[in-house]
Length: 266
Image (cartoon, rainbow, N blue to C red; front, side, top):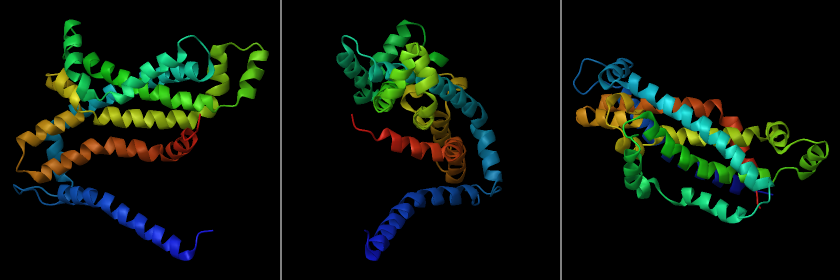
């Protein structure tokens, strides 16, 4: 049983870490709502000015399209591959799984240059696919690992009962195992969405058209134009980060539950 002193020490330690994490957010919000460096605007008017000058409307639409495509394709492929690795036995299963894990261990910086030349040879540079396909590949690697862990911990008795009743592997996946897996799938969805939304290197290398710039990339170009205007830069940063914060707050309960379910041992 935890003593009162230990409980107080835990709360103090957590409060210190919370203040350390929240301080940069408070600084950015204060700067975004403060008077502009060049004068003339303050408060919410700074967000309107940053929106118009930085073309964030176009950048956010591109990021939403890229994130939606990457999340849907990655989650569906991860569910199917995780189901195969977690419930089926086939030749080369272990070797193929570790081949998938190279996608987690290999940083995007290490493959960005050869990936650029591969996509250029296919004529995909400066297209929507040059942004989404690499991120799908990287997300499926983690998604396979995540969903495999869930399916390994699933109730084998239910699976065997469904198969005795004549259910196919496809039906076992989508009608028996998938409904209880909602927290794990929501957690995977949120993680892939955040990683895709915040990805900077792949869009920077793969696209040159302004219409294909994602929100983080657009923010970097906006920073280059307004290096002395910290107020508008702070407002732009808040605009770019807001969709991720909203999405996380909306799925927070399922996210925590999914993390607890994902903490399984093989």
